[in-house]
Length: 613
Image 1: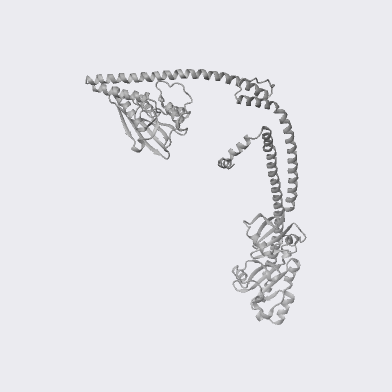
Image 2: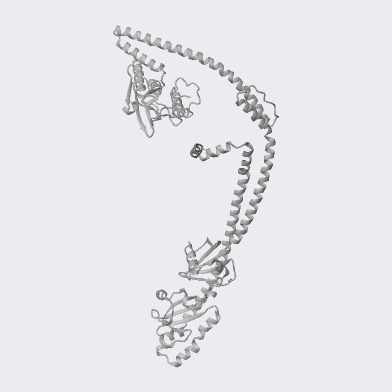
């Protein structure tokens, strides 16, 4: 058991699945196919469909919330505009400015007259705009001359020092802020200068938050949404809102959670709160440097959607189980004839070749039985053919032995001719016969099909010497091979055909002297043996055709034309791929009338070549 687990652990996952699937019966495979073809796609499609519905619900909620926010933002901008128009009409009131500038020199009657007659314009503005909560002038050094609640001393202005510095830096431009000391009222402030450049005081006009942010406080009983606004460190929210109480978050945590998620002037995001999915939309109100938020729950709709999804899933699974049962029954009926064929195949597997396969009809299984019957007859016929071929092979082996005997006879004759030439002082003839004998012995002796590179190079040297006897020493052989490569084992007669091809199709056509270079180098885990000649070369078309033949792996064994540049190369390339692997072989470069270079790429990782089967 432990051994089986070790084997299973080392297998790849696809192999494990293939092994598991191969052990299943055909009925179980059909059931599994139903799961993969019917149930699994339905579940996956249903999942993504419900996810899409959920996304649409969320998107609709976001769009609705964004619409509500835009309406609230428009109302806020109207309130801002109301305050700015009112401020513009009041701030230019010459009576106020004169009072601020000449208060110290005014008599009591003039002060009383200003209070009861000149301030009526301001009061009429407030009556005309009931949404305005307070209009005040905070004048510098007015002391006891305050006329509450409109004319106040600047020292009684309760705002942050940073706000005051900012108001003065704006040089008469508007500054907005949420004043926590005045019921979180939203205040507009402007510096009063009269004459220009001389500070007189600060003007304030404000609205209460429930008026200014009317959408924030409109729906305290809403259990599914709420609105709030954040300005710097301040958050305005209706704490009586039912949805806010359901969230059970304090104002500080809610403010931090919302502020951290702001990415732009307008946007939305989702958040989890108390096991609820909450959609949050927000928009920026630039005038008052404030973000307006709307939080709405999508959990109720999501729960209803989940219940619907579960009910549909149960229906799908139930339907699938019924279909599986029906499929099993129908499959058993259909596979009855197939089981007969399987039984006959098992008998044949045990060696009972002379059996009668009945006619099982004309359907697919009947057709299978017919082909199986024909195949069995063909097997019996081929068996007898193989026996005949074995007899012929034995005869061929005897003939091969006879050829080997003749080869030894030829060696002895050549040796005798060599001695006759030597005795008659024909040393060149004697040496040529010696070379020829070595060449023939190397070519015919196949007791070992692997040799070291040095032996192959020596054989090539003998071949070139014989060629030079024929061509009057016109072929030069240059060897550039390091000692570390000379003992590399390779297939016998792997380089000689390449060199012979270089002589016959590279140097001979030009009829002039030439050079053949052989070098070796290693790259990563391979050795490259390069044979280069400076002969006739090949055109680009011929090179392309030859490379195509080599890439085809020798699949086309038609005889080469007599003048083809590929004689012997296809055979060498096919042997390399057969013994070493498909990633090795020949690569050819050539330029017409310049050179031809053949690179033999072999593995160089100290492993033996693959033996014949």
